[in-house]
Image 1 (spheres, rainbow, N blue to C red):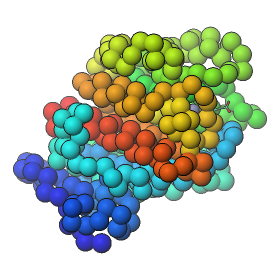
Image 2 (spheres, rainbow, N blue to C red; image 1 turned 120 degrees about the horizontal axis):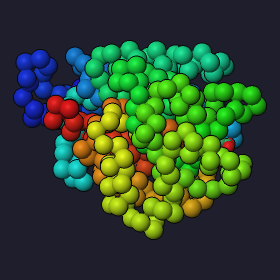
Image 3 (cartoon, rainbow, N blue to C red; image 1 turned 180 degrees about the vertical axis):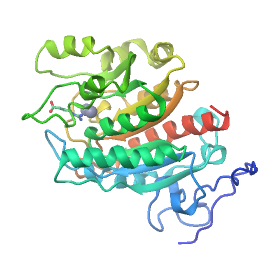
Length: 332
Ligand SMILES: N=C(N)NCCCC(=O)O
Ligand SMILES: [Zn+2]
Ligand SMILES: [Zn+2]
């Protein structure tokens, strides 16, 4: 594959050369060569990244269908069709900041505790370079070590959690680190700013009413999937922005927040979810927030059809990345 890349137009500022953009799909077929996110350079091909896209092929924390370990690479494959100008945010993200694909974190698939440590450590090293992280999961277990690493750098962060599920349950089979429990652990560990925690898109059967009261005690507010439908994306985004204010913000997107019609390729699907249009619009409405890092998790390509889920996840990561690049360009 040629290493030809699009000229991005940002003049080098002395500290760093102009960002190296994606491979030009008008010159090199977009279906050629190994996949990196959005056909961007690998991190080792750049002097350093403002946004590092990193995969975590780990799904040992799941309670139902496995397969999210293949999610990151499915998202990279589906991201070949992304283009460099984002009209919805009026920005060319990859010209505003250097985005690079940092490859995958090698988490132990046989020892969850060790995997959690590995993800925290590797994420911490990437954050120490000054990059923001756009993580491609993996199951939702990985949000805990990612939040630990982010909190070490920024202090406790506001959390905006898009998911069909609360993921604030306590344990499964006595296990503390699973994909249904990361945010309870994160609250217990003090890595979240409990004055600004929101779930968006929740729905479906619970174990009991106490799931909701426990969750509320931890400080979470809930915008259900039905609330999004009734109130509309602009009102929801306004309310979220007000709650978040200028706190450092982490956004975690479990792709099962989308209706199974929009994201069949996931491990614990629930009927009655958001559309991909609603999700993308709410994300765009977060412009102005201080987004420090984000993840997109729970893409399980074995249950996908025609890359529906992976395409939705790639666009989700694209909107989040665009928000981060705009902030870099604004010096925030
Ligand atoms: N984080 C995701 N996707 N799912 C959690 C579901 C936990 C359960 O089986 O009750
Ligand atoms: Zn979920
Ligand atoms: Zn989840």
